[in-house]
Length: 439
Ligand SMILES: Cc1ncc(COP(=O)(O)O)c(C=O)c1O
Image (cartoon, rainbow, N blue to C red):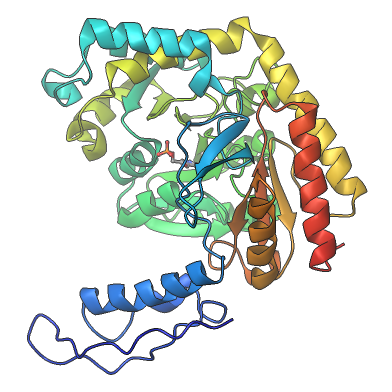
């Protein structure tokens, strides 16, 4: 079905000039987000065209973004049906809440208690009054958990990665990045030189390191510990070895690794038994730790510098007392309740075995993130619609987020998913795969 939009009235740009006549049909099966990066006309015109595209995608049942939950995160959630306005229960496979600490009674109770004691917000930026005793305590606890001298807290993981890199690296330096690092890291390289190496490919990394050897002042290799769209693990032991042999530092983003991998959930350095050897350990509080915010753990001197130069730290209000208290309790839960991580890993093993048994391509997934690679954007959108219609909440990942030949469904697991939830998801994905000729 192709939706024809009503003809647009003639509109003008800010300078009062009429804008170019536009196509009245935005066929979202042929267009992608890339097509709206640079269109003829000013920003309002660009927004109008993009809205046409979005309306078409919605009319086809291909837009599953910003679905509204009325219950918050959990193995199942109640989601508003945009057509009927009614709520519907869905098995939730679209979060990063791997241990479901968003709803753990201990993290929830700690957050409520801190709100009563300290109020709803920090009230100021951290350098000018927004630093409370609980912020200092969390900094120390994060540093200890990550085996580093010190840590700095940011109000978002994105701001943490981006602001830290923008502060550390200038035009005399170079960031040597895995091709698949997160957008927050890529955006942080805006002030410096950037060289990419092929994803998790050590020969490629070595070549780039050799090429950069005497050219730059600071050389920093930047990787994710666990890759957010593929669920594979960086070969961090080898990366650190190669980087240090070439006088480069290593920064690893532990967003999807913290609480999930390593014997005690301490992440990728623990997984490879190289704790203390990674120069800069970054992470978010928004995934397995179940709240919001980001951190950098490293040498004390670097943390001191970030306190006074990282703009996304200095000019942003400190994390809320609720989030800080919930996070402190969350770190304790990770240490004291290892059975949560064991349940997550039981689920990972079960889901992986069954998806492979059904004949799906799940790439190199090794953790709680499962790409179900379909290689066709339109089929991905149709399969996601099918899954949502049958009560299973998975995400579409299509071009330009990934190359078209790698478009996929993204499923993520939680420790609190039961076998029943997993079976429902597996059966539904199987039915979708058969319906659209994927398996
Ligand atoms: C690998 C990675 N790093 C950083 C971030 C940003 O973290 P936050 O959502 O806490 O801002 C994300 C995503 O949300 C991520 O997937």
